[in-house]
Picture 1 (cartoon, rainbow, N blue to C red):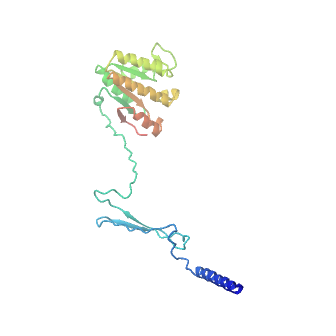
Picture 2: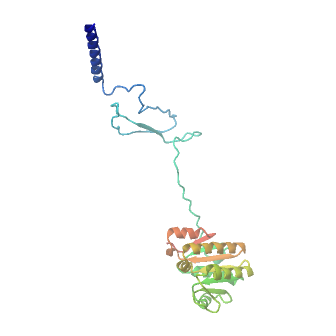
Picture 3: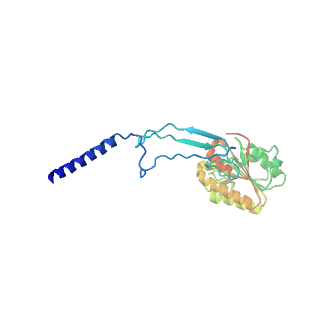
Length: 265
């Protein structure tokens, strides 16, 4: 009995050794067992004959755990068939630019009831437009950083109400630049309420921003636009575009109905 047990044990050892030797002789690139995770699956895409295709072969990747090199092929459809969805949707960013209004060659081309932004180095064109409308009977109000008497004589605005944006008090014709919500806004509201369909020109936005900050002045401009629209009045605002960054200039332009550029940045 002991000899038979030794003989059976010897046979088992021989079988185990043979299996181990056979496993070592297996090629490295043998297919993985069925239960193994699939690393790559070949897909053949059917492309209609009327479509153009482009096949791009990617550089072979390093061998995976099974010893097989992976080669990836990508088929890209470059023309979409009518009635079928594209294989891949690409996000497109469309930048819509605001339509540029043609620069008026005559003050008569300015329509009443709109809010205008005039971009120029000096407020000459703005005052010319303002004067042309006032001379034809429109009631006008001027708010400027220049001395009132100088404005009246230079542009012939006799009989027009002119306020001076200054910290100095002068014959009730000055408005404190820091009091946008009180003195400045109140003066404009009182004028347009007494004179509907009137005309307002503001010169010195750069100075107001320097004193009050950009955000506060933008709030003031929005309020002025609302007041003028509610009373069927017209607002002309003159600015020097070189005093602003492109971002801030774009923000200012969005607040007006018409933007006229007489000078580029």
